[in-house]
Image 1 (cartoon, rainbow, N blue to C red):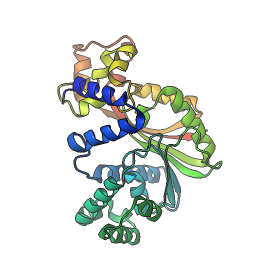
Image 2 (tube, one colour; image 1 turned 180 degrees about the horizontal axis):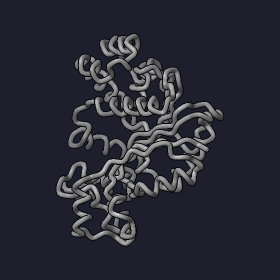
Image 3 (spheres, helix red, strand yellow; image 1 turned 180 degrees about the vertical axis):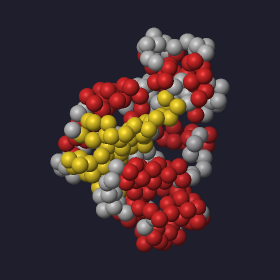
Length: 311
């Protein structure tokens, strides 16, 4: 689907009253979008990657408490943490998007592809927990509550990651996966400041940020930096709605943001988009003045893992 058509549909659906809007958008995603078939592997991989990044910093994630910002439709990343031995995950989402039927379909995929999942986790997998999950998957009476209880996931939605009401120093790892790009800068700083309060002194912040124009994920006619052509007011007309808001912050902006929140950067693993790099190099792309002063090597970064620690 062409991105401007998708933007128009999202804007129309977003204008509906919230309850109707959520229902209509979910129906569209199930029939025409990314929810037509459920494959939890990419999100399980995300949890594994976060786990390994923690271990790389000589920290032990076993038996620890995770916070996830942005649950989405199903808490697959927290499931991944639990399968590797996390004590529990507190998953907070502003919008109550989670769906029981998607959890069931995800469990069904895991049950029917056990060997793939075993190979995915390798030695990191807690076999006792995996067998419990498979046993649940066999039952026809799987419910969201039973799943969350088994996997030790505290789901809070609607919830506010900038005001969690969690006790001081009650979590070990503050995480998100492709969520921060959908949150305004003013709110992000508050989320990080709240994170400083609830994380333990030796805890880590691990966040995967997608800097790309998300419309490019489903429209190959545009590049990952397509949205850098537009002013804020122009872009708001296309993606100023609850379903496709993107803050368009670049990698250097995030580094400044984490620093402003009182963090030291432990590691930043950036992803360079070669196609965007070539376009910027040959200057056949009309950057908006908001981004024109930034160097090409920053603008071509379309994703990053950012690991930080409060000072």
